[in-house]
Amino acid sequence: MTTHLHITTWLLGLILFFAAVSLFNSGKMKPFTIVHMITRVFYLLILATGVQLFIAGYNLSKGEYFGKLFLGLVIIVLMELILVRTKKRKPVRTLWIIFVIALILVIYMGLRLPLGFHPFA
Ligand code: HEM
Image (tube, rainbow, N blue to C red; front, side):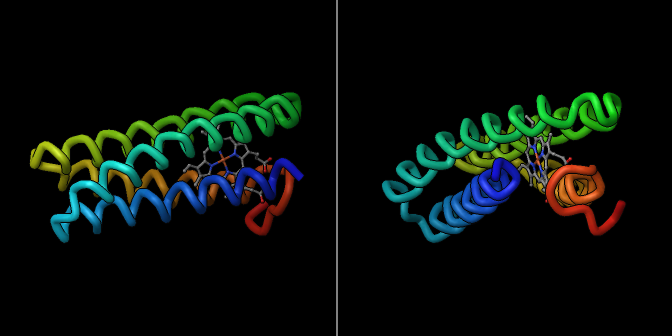
């Protein structure tokens, strides 16, 4: 159950994040601000479901679950940094590269760990 909620929240969170970036790029500032705010609510939902899974799985493999928690936090920080820096028109190229790598790692790691789906275990 929590697995499905977690997947739903991070998928919607990512979709909102990409929507915000493209709204900014097409100059739609007001919709960008609104979508950015909703994205922030999703950070909390992703965190809440992630922490629930962490508590459920922690004893199965402590190190890996800490790794997953850390990577999940990194992704959220990167999403927020990218949105804020994009808004301020500051360089975001390096952040995007780290974001893509961290996203692949976090999805791979989530799918390797024992709860929910584990095609890479
Ligand atoms: C955008 C950010 C995130 C993405 C893309 C992501 C991705 C995933 C994926 C693909 C899974 C596997 C689901 C399954 O078992 O079928 C998963 C599980 C999990 N996630 Fe996340 N996650 C994110 C954020 C977080 C955060 C912030 C935390 C911790 C606070 C977290 C903690 C966990 C835990 C503990 C699991 C259970 C691992 C298991 O399957 O045993 N995740 N996540």
